[in-house]
Length: 263
Ligand SMILES: O=C(CO)COP(=O)(O)O
Image (cartoon, rainbow, N blue to C red):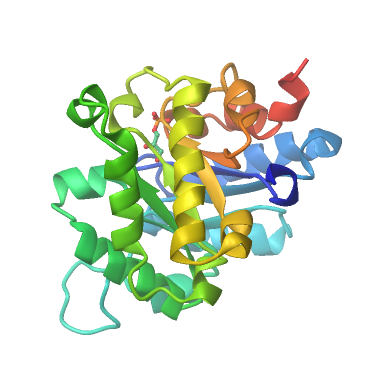
């Protein structure tokens, strides 16, 4: 039942906003959200920021006791050692991260991340007490062939290999059809529901009903304040993973306050 899950609105900044811009953006976001507290208190809000912003965001959130979660956009599958350029789950946990995105389509496409690596990263996140936001979704060719459900479920299954039931209860899954990312081409609410519902059903098969009921399934792909309410009205959509629109704190706050837009 969608009503028992706290919606999550997560902003994925991608490679935008340096650490000084991050401070201004988070301050403005927190201030705007606070201003509309009664509208958003049932919604959890998070930002996934570049690694170089994390310390600044942590300092701000701690100092001002902001009601905001934050996290990274990727992590290493390794614990530590000679892996130049990589950032470990332990380092992210030390910076107070709640979440880490894993398997974003841009990582899969530009960094050749396959299902095995995504699975290893999901397990590395859990090993350090981080909640992975597992990103899945089909490209345009697969959508045209009508194979979006089987493709996306195969990604979910592969990513959850050797993930315990206790861990699965925590995971967040973001369905992001690749053709809708950064294109302005938003999936229809029915498109989002079709795949998000199928993800929940496969969780029942892989685990059980309690896990399926607990897991938050987000939609991502050209989410804006003008379309979020219709998407959130779907029974199996529990939040949004927002790219471009999350860079503007006023717009992102409007997305997080989507209930205010449901007339
Ligand atoms: O990839 C996304 C979030 O992870 C979606 O990006 P846009 O909201 O810019 O389409």
